[in-house]
Image 1 (cartoon, rainbow, N blue to C red):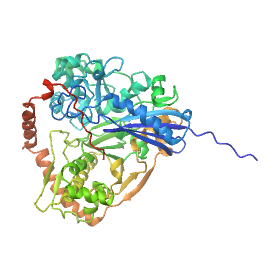
Image 2: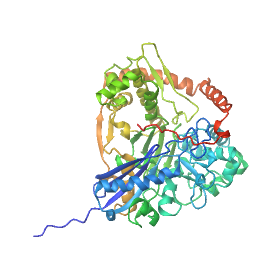
Image 3: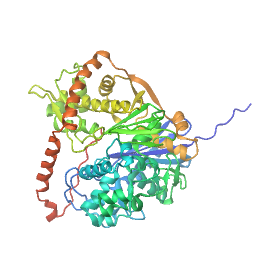
Image 4: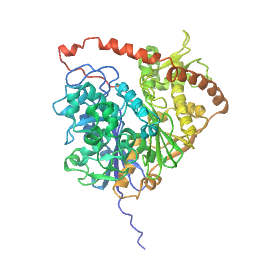
Amino acid sequence: MTPPTREPDQYVVGVDFGTLSGRAVVVRVRDGEEVGTAVHTYPHGVIDRALPTTGTRLPPDWALQHPEDWREVLRHAVPAAVAAAGVDPAAVIGLATDFTACTVLPVRGDGTPLAESGLGDRPHAWPKLWKHHAAQDQADRINRLAHARAEKWISRYGGKISAEWQYAKALQVLEEDPATYVVTDRWIEAADWIVWQLTGVETRNACTAGYKGIHQDGHYPSEEYLGALHPDFADFARTRLEHPLSPLGSRAGSLTAEAAAWTGLPEGIAVAAGNVDAHVAAAAAQAVENGRLLAVMGTSTCHVVNGATLADVPGICGVVDGGIVEGAYGYEAGQSAVGDIFAWWLRQGVPAEYAAEAEANGEDLHELLTRRIADQPVGGHGLVALDWMNGNRSPLVDHHLSGVVVGLTLATRPEEVYRALLEATAFGTRTIVEALEQGGVPVEEFIVTGGLKKNALLMRIYADVLRRPVSLAVSAQGPALGSAIHAAVAAGAYPDVRTAASAMGRVDRAVYRPDPARADAYDALYAEYRLLHDHFGTGPDRQMHRLRALRNRALSAVPDPAAATPQLAPTTPDSEV
């Protein structure tokens, strides 16, 4: 008897656009096997010092990106991943992308970024990266007015709209560069813009609209409310945002001939609706069922979890019906810096002899510091730190807050500060988990994906601080795999994201378990963290805000040399952790 023949394997491609690079992965549809991957580093990285076109110095708290860097990922990472996989591009049936959020840009009516349409000398014409925090004053006004008017939607965002999101950034453009705002035809998340580049048609996805665009119960904020913020802002949502929303996993369109030439993929294949890196990764980690909290840990951390009911949780980033998967309320929270904090300390606080030792041992500085401090008893460094080097995303939603390390002495060693910073991020996550559970959202499992899951000491600290097991997503490219899973759904290979996640996602359960003695010791240290957290974050003394204001005034008074002599001033991006 002739054995039955199996249909030829089909593949999908997921592309994850991160803070410093883009990653593409080729995935087999039937079982989620990752057969090829490639990474392309953005040549311009994070533009936070000067415009690449003119050298014009940027003010404090700015963070921009170059749209051409994102296209280059399609031209380089996707073909390289397919080549590494060794598969026939004709076997690829779908493509999906995810992006950092809220990374947003002003564009012309045809999708051309303003920065590429004759306005490259104007900072506000450039895409604003998620970590652009210069719109905090606008965010504060948005929140005050929402509470004064008792806007129903404000409670869906924990009581505060973030400076990182669409409205604060757009209002900043209007108030600081009205000429650029006037010629902004569309204000769009990069997650949707890249799909526009791939399909040739504008689409908007339900995830970014709900979490970053204040789209709740079928509506954006009213024109009356927006006009009360600024008369010229009244029609912002109607003219620059409004568009039918595409469900997650749906087909946004087909790959154009131009995009097929960029990627080397077949023209006409399915392109999925855009998505956010953290939310799309839930499918890769099989974290789509209620109560499974996924922490996407990289330069920052985003926490997402599904719940069965709608609850108002103070300080969260948002809750959206169907924001992660259909049929559940998706809750989001996060920390604005995690891996960035550790990388900062490596740049600033590690002496030359440490670097020499690491090089001699064939290890990087993270490995060296971890090895030096791994066996120290909890609290043995005498330190406690606040993880606010890039502000606080949740639960305080305040990007004018800053970092603190308490307990330094002349005997403090660099690895001890490093461990205190690791612990600070775990404490920050604990405040988020506690806020969710106190708000009525159960957290039954804690799952980690992202580059930081490879640090065993960090994962052990999280298990002890949280007093719960830590599970690990198997994939090293969680968001990219999650996008690939959504591509399979968009191409019709699976009926929905839950089914696809079950077949294509992978997770190792309870890899790290809490040690009772260490957990007890961390309870005492966490109590000290909460004292600092409450004093600087919610107390009446606004010292961090005053220091930020003093810094901004001082820097604003310094003349910009590039204003007199324009010149190129490229920046060197930090390495992603």
